[in-house]
Image 1: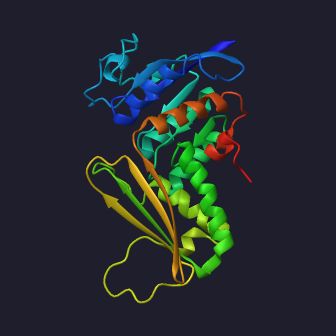
Image 2 (image 1 turned 180 degrees about the horizontal axis):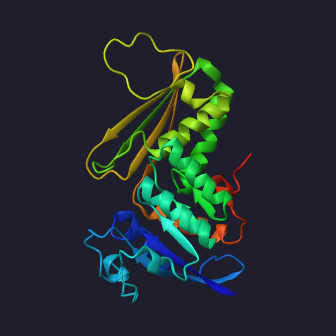
Image 3 (image 1 turned 120 degrees about the vertical axis):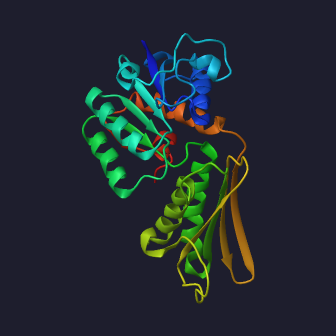
Length: 280
């Protein structure tokens, strides 16, 4: 059996540090049957990151790992088996192409990708990468996704659907990837195309709400890790399904779980529903 050697992208960021801690914590626990362990093989970030040149363990608040955070992507990926990547769309596309060339596992937690960027990542999966891409890697959110799909299917258009999300003041994309995941789940439950029914903002005299629309509202402020609420509002009653992330550990643990799972899969594009066995 061999060890899964992981390269952490965006190691100088908050999610990068969380991913480093999660890999270290996972070593020796509930591993894939063909693996003897998992380790931080390398860590890298942008050239202007303050983390460059620092020990990845120390930077993440752990004991030293002997892994120095670098801006040399080629050197970081040499000898790696997997990439855990919560960075930016263009960076994730480039990393997916490198993953395809080397046959790596690529865990993509990056949100805000355009349709063209999503297509490029899909093509990398078709070219040989084992990619797990999700708007949210937490177990709770992925279970919530299934509940939303089921509720939307049962309640139908008699219940209006609104999705409210709040994140910290440094998040750059809106709606969040998780909100869009939940919107897709609601649309799937209703058997409709989300793009044809999504309303991403209201201002001024908008007229009455269109039956069947799925609304999104994005709030930003403070240090909120991630709150998501799906409201199904009907005649004289309302159902609210809520998930609140209290820290980034839940996302990092999910990413590690996805990496271990993907190590045993053929090349292709997967999501957390595949990892958790929730498809269907």
